[in-house]
Length: 84
Image (cartoon, rainbow, N blue to C red; front, side, top):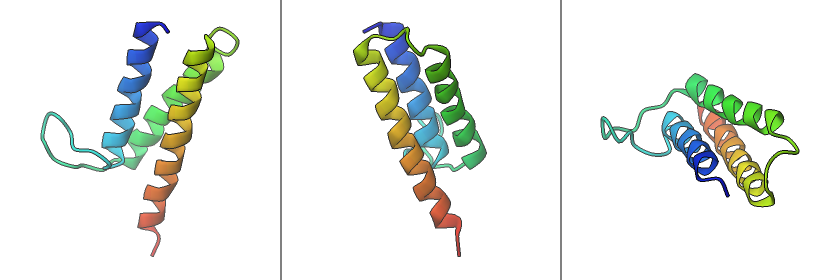
């Protein structure tokens, strides 16, 4: 697996998790929530998935698919918290 690809995917995943308020920011140490930014980060990964289709190793594809699946589930879960 290409280490740079792996790091990029995990970086965007971590950012999205922070933006959803799932983990604390390493800079502030606080849990902050910004669902618009989380949506943007997930969108970046979706764009990567589309642009790299057919060009990833099986392990890279599996990583990207799994990360997107988990982020989408967490995003929907967080949106449900906003419903009265």
